[in-house]
Length: 433
Image (cartoon, rainbow, N blue to C red; front, side, top):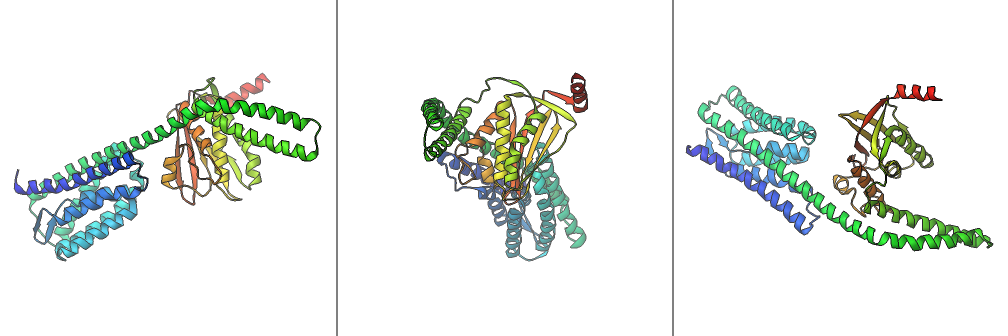
């Protein structure tokens, strides 16, 4: 191994060190519950490694500065998007200018601006890809970026470059990008696991609390309600009846909260039955329409050609749908629409509930389903917590996408056990009638 190759590998060590630094910050955040460490953590890897690579380059030759800056630049742009990418682009241009505004500077300016715009465009798709697609895209971009630099150097500025060195340079870039992409995905996966562990700890505490006190609290509530009901129905003044009615309403509200706790403490269904998803969605829409009309909200349910059957507790599934639709209505002012669309794909039914409300930040989305976390002024967070628990018990999951100020889409994804053609089923019912 020649000296230049060793220097390139040392340059790659800077990238690995910053990746391990990010992992350490994530672990500290989990261990000490440091909520103030937020999205800026992802900027540590690309920004710090980019600066180290450029300030401690491999070699300076023919007006060129050789280093591995392309790796953090491309990965940072794909991961962090436009804002982080612009910061990196400015850093590259400023540092390279002070290293010398020679031919290499102009090659850097042309290629990094061009590749940067391409990376910014692809970043919105990158986060939705699987690991294989991410690796393939990052490697394809690094190859394209390096050969773009080669093309600009030779055909625009007329600079000849050593072919053997160039082959080594490209090879180490490809290997480095492959390892860096995999390590970053491992770090992100570990962090997501840690987040789930934190949430699981909180949910377990609430579960034990609910199981231990809910029954004891509900029993005196039931007795109190019975006596107040007798007072309300007996001989009393109008004022006392009004007071008794208010007391009954508040007791019922308290009972609903206790029931939510019990639902979470005992998520297992009492009965498991076949659920016609279409009928339950339509039933939930019928229940929620009066509330929507009171708030000037339109509810639109798209028609489908098939009936989809899942397994679970029908009443609890209705409760989940109503909770999500109700939250959507409450997130909007006195206008707007809630659109509900069913999409069947790969034996899974996607129930998409899209509102036009105030939306949520990514941090709020990540905390959905936690006990006592809510975006409403007078909410408890129990409704959403119970909804997540119900869908999980049905072997499904809830995926949330939102833009602050633009609205939120809840996608309930459930396994489908049978699909029935709607026309055939309706004709069968007609004949039976």
